[in-house]
Image (tube, rainbow, N blue to C red; front, side):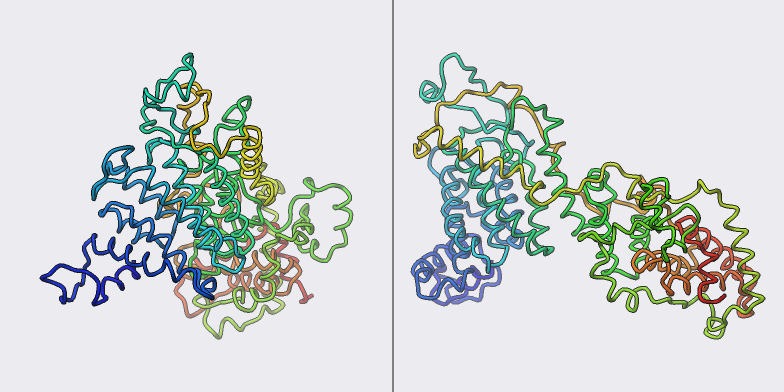
Length: 590
């Protein structure tokens, strides 16, 4: 868009006779269209110059200008204003053209119409220009995204179905009467469905293969570099349900739709990337159940790092972490015996042991965070709870005896059967899917399409092959419910965050003292990250015990009672989450 406006500003750019030298602030649509034609002319020779490969954007601008040349005047800005995300840009462009009835099959084109075949060919030529750039390992992922957007756009245009409606697995089988005998046998049913508004264009399956290859290349590239922009492109593709449905195709006839593994893999892939962009999407059960637990915690930890002042980020993270350790009844006897003399496990409540294997996994969320979270994130802040003088007071022998007595009484009041359920064993639907497994459905499309081309032996033919028409029932199957749906995370309320599938609840303390709640969460997170035997855990528990025992003269009686009650609730919550608060208070003191 900026390049087009720069060309429009040139003094030699053609304008009307009356305003040839006027300063133009807002350009008419036809100026941008003519600017694209001018750019095409200028860049046509520049693209072949020496050293042009180090400027890949020249090729992208030329490819897009080729498309703009064939667009109706009114549609030019639709592509220009959404170019930050190529997938959304092409998707919205096609929806706009369909909604405005600008796509026609035959006839003379005017300023507000475009032939479907001509636009599809423009998409194809633009994709061929961008393809060599996108394949280079050194170019930005945006070029790969443009290639996928154009390939999927071509697929939709060739399919003949109404763009913007429900997602179906088959292209259109509508045909004109004069083509009937050439394409189908007389015995076949030729009735078309309401969404089949145009004839399918030639080489649909070849375009489907090209779209699958481009999509797989983008997915692998995004997974390799691990950037948020790559995740944004992947989620945008998978949210384009109509294009994904045509890309996936009908699949094996013998497999019922509701048990077809392709949809589960697509949902799992979507879940894997949407949480990197919108962590609150974890509250969607369809997203949550498709993820490995370490992936979930890593996403929540990343969101927490971005907004450490947001109490909801703390709550979401600790609720997913769950208790420190798991009940011994969920461990095998060999592991239980190995942990009997473990330094870390002795600081857990009776019947709990640490799951040491989790930290040894390559995907463990804490590998990179151990080096900096304690000094920069988890330092024991005590602001707004006690005065500076009162914070420095240590537990003397009398206070220590009183605290230990109260803690033992508190812990004994909690039944052994009352503990926070751990997501690591409470959720049976968490799947660990490797990258190769997640991309299986795309590789299967590519393999089957190539095999089909070899078997036919006539894939160079420009006419539609004579085909057997699928049944009306098969062509009318909608798969919208099988595919991801974009969800505005602002629709997820705090009530949704509390009512999840796990029993691990946030600590119930007064909203007037958020510092105590955060202090409680710091203790739990530190125990998960560094071990329950870390001194920072003991110091955090001792501080909460000190607050519970404190009789501050600088506060009124009601505030003292509220703070004591909240501190007691924090200690109770930590015990339910597996920490032996009595032993931790005594750590390095007795």
